[in-house]
Length: 443
Image 1 (tube, helix red, strand yellow):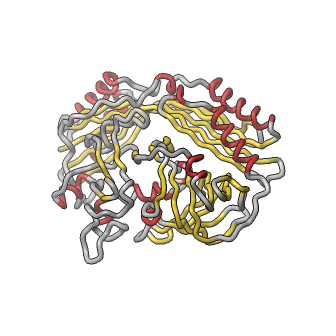
Image 2 (tube, rainbow, N blue to C red):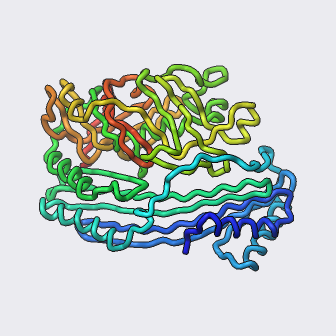
């Protein structure tokens, strides 16, 4: 049994701390149960299950620290592990960025674990893959998909008296459909904490419609276009993404040390400056019912509702405990997920209001060009369509783009309703002057 309840985890952690002879000791205990199924060319290719419980100890003597990990839990193994961590700590150099462990904290209660997801069976995974493959066969398409689910627990206890416990669950699904001649491709992705919200048929239908509509794409000249970016084109859990790049840049130390777009020339950061369209507001909240997450960060700091960007103004940056203390600023951990406020327009509304533009399903192979401006390059993929006079005119060949989310969020025309992607809530966006630099023969 890989998932321990609060009392079971607490008992093990207390026992380990009773063995410690170090100045400070902190123990992290975690477990996971889950499974997956993968299919390609309309056949299941792999199916697996995972179950594991692991434990990590950090022992400290002054500013020297040593760590050791194990997945055995008898008394002899635990005592041996404690001694290993302590021996390593005695040999380690002093950490110049040492900061003592946290004392007891108060955490917001969150609801990130769902029995519906924890109880997913191999039969359920096979049923999802079977339905998707059946739908592909009915349309003479080729399907490739992946379904993965997890139920997890994490617990932390230290010699300063801190104790934290959390359980969460997640299910992620992605599917690509291709036409028999290989000229059309469609994609859909979904992720939830509660699998009862997941509809494999709906997701497969979206991918099928895009594949059948994108066959025999025409080439049009690259250049600056108005684009409608679906949520999967803004955030991804399989590759870099434009919004992911922006949110990964909200680090105080990187800005202070001149290594991000938030660094000011000559020193300082752009915290408090208006850098985006005033409709851009991004916050985090571990209690959000659509993207619930742990009430505490990996280092034990409490997670709370934080506004990162408000009406285009950068309001907060996250940091490490060391950097917060070093700079004498508020200590703010990176959140479990981000929420971007949206608007009322549907993607159909955005298409109707577009004279000439491009609808993008997703972006792929995204790589950084310039971290100081957050300029990225990558390709469109799996459903790119030309819009003219408020209607989708025809599919177009894929493009390479060069774009920065900083520029993109200043060229905003419209926002739609936020959707969950990769554990975040992101709305579809209509953006003017998005830069496509060349054509790609990739489908």
